[in-house]
Structure formats: C-alpha cells, structure tokens
Image (cartoon, rainbow, N blue to C red; front, top):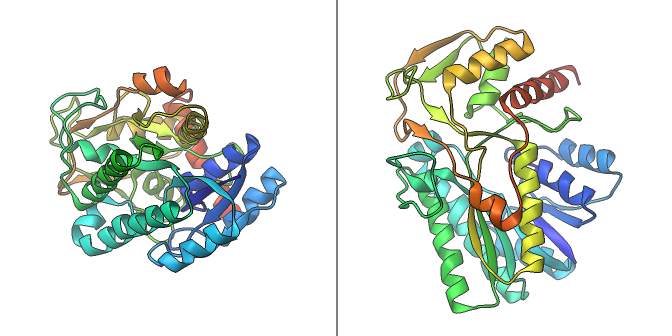
Length: 334
C-alpha cells in the first residue's frame, strides 16, 4: 500500500516525501511541475536511495488521476497540490478555484471510485480570516478574507460533508502557518520558479543580491514594531507533522482538524534581524503600503496536535533562518 503525495515535488511536498521514505512508507508523487522541477525528484531518490513512482499530471485532468489509481495501490493521500499566494489569488481568483477546488473535487471523486478513504489535507491559517486574538485555536470562527483562504475552506467543507455521508471516510486537516527553512542536506529549501511571493525566499534572494531590496508590506500594523506578526514553522517540523497524521489515519478511526505552528509569533522586522545575525549577511529593506487581505497578528495554538498526534515543533527561528540561507547558497552554487 502506497501514499500518494500530490504536489510532491514542491517545497513542503518534497520534504514530506523524504520523511515518509525515511519512515519506510512507499511513495507515489504527482506534480504538474508548475512550481517545481524534475531535478527535485532525482535529489529525493539519491538522498533516500529509493525509486519513486512519479506522474507528471495536472489534477484538473480527472482521467489522469484515474490512471494513477489504476496503476498504483494507493492507501492514503497527502494533498498539497494547488496555488498558494494570497495576493496572487486576489488578482487571479479563477485560477485559484480551478487549481485548488476543481482539482480537489477530481481527486476526491477518484478516491471514492477506488475506495481510498484516507486523506491528509494541506490547509492554511488563512481560513481563520482576521482573528480577534492569538494564539489561534482550531475552534475559532472560520472566515476567509481572500480567494486563497476561501479555496482552502471550501475543500475543508467538502471533506467534512463527505465524512458525514460516508463514515468510513477519514481525514486529517492540517492548518499550518508560515513554513520556512530547508532540509539539512541543503537541497530542499523554498526556491520557487520565478519571482518569490513568500517572505523567506524573498529575504534569501535579497541577501544573495538577486533582488535589490526587500519590500515590507505595511509598517503601521497594531504590533510592537508596526510590521505584521506571523508564526513561522520549520518545514522539516511541518513535514514530520504529516507523518504523524498519516500514522494517525492508519491507527485510528477519527477525523480531526489540527493547527501546525510553533505557538510563537515574530514580526517581519524580527525575522529579518534574526536572518542577518545568524547568517552574517545584509538584507536591505524598505516599508511600503499594505497588501489587501493581510492581517496584523497570526500565530497558532498547536496544543491539540501535541495531544492528538503527539507532534510539536522542535526547531527555532535561528534554525529556520540558517537552513533557509543554506538552501539558497546550495542552489546558487549547483
């Protein structure tokens, strides 16, 4: 029995694939390579000394998904595939509904056809909208304020409705916060195709002089230094959370929703300052206008993940900054 990872050559998907292989799971990856590379597949196989079944498919093509399930004995799915930039979703909402919602419907339909009943869904803290307080608990009101968050919330609702219609169906929804960092091999950091949209790869590219200056969106938030506060989580900690979630699915009959975060918020300026000190580099930056859809403060209460799946973040902000930079340097030199 195999684990299908959708978007498995992406940043979080590739790190999760490594953790699954190291835990002796058999892995199948599907990825349309829109924000990833076949080179990542070779790196995973070389690192883990295992061959991976890979499909260069787009989940918007339901027949392509059927082809995977007809050839592979899929026991569970970890669903990462989709678009993920908040600001881009405001500009291109149709693309987000096609890639995040339609693709998920196709996947869930094929899972039902092949009696695959277990899924870990990659959700997001954006489903909480503008929470009035932090830390954020799983039972907070859900109210997405941008198309990206709405697509995540729609798929969450699909999963709960499917569960209500079929008690044998089982899910773990993981709402995570801001993944950063990279694998200790330096080969699996967040190195997006094109211009980055997330803050850590932007910081790395400014530090490596690919980009002249970092623009900080908003210096007038209701925080101690005026910049937004977020819960940054190391991608290796995050990947391990998915292993615990898969283990839960195979050892329990419940379906659950969990936050994955450190429970500690850092401002954008604190992130930049830590990055500069840890890596002994300079990150030129300036404050510009806010972006639509961003919130002041957002960090997790992840105590339920500790209670239910025995997971908690182990790596700190210095680790995240060091490993992010090491990954950027590795890519630049190879």
